Image (tube, rainbow, N blue to C red; front, top):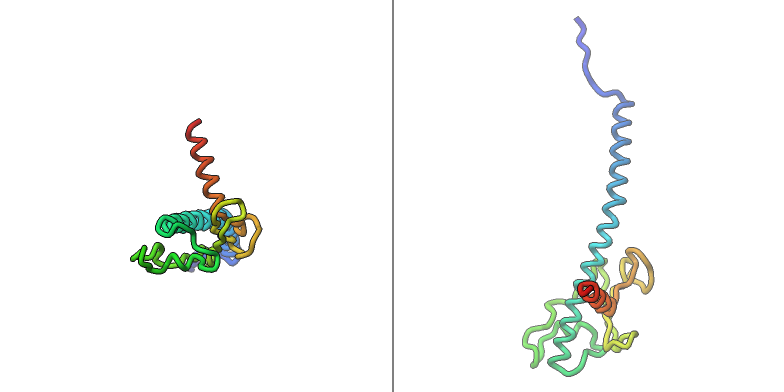
Length: 148
């Protein structure tokens, strides 16, 4: 009697691998969007934390840090703040430092900016800039929607 070994043919293996590659591509495209949104949400949260530290600095000193002092002053101990307002200077989710300007461009006393994935001003999608004054507008819009 001859025994026949059962195995997959090269054509069957190629078809299975092609289907797996197609599924992996679909999953990658769908997950990428969620990863970008997640990083943007982390940047918004970190900007809000920086803004809280800036407000605490203002409460203690009667002024905001100058642009030259930058955000680094929030990580230093002072007579008025024996503990630093921030443990360390946060880096955005794409590995770039947050930008700080005083006064802000929209009449705000300051602005904190994340330039997105490309690290440059402008852009959309993952490269979209996130501004501290945008967070205040989002909060005001959320409160307005909650009252209606």
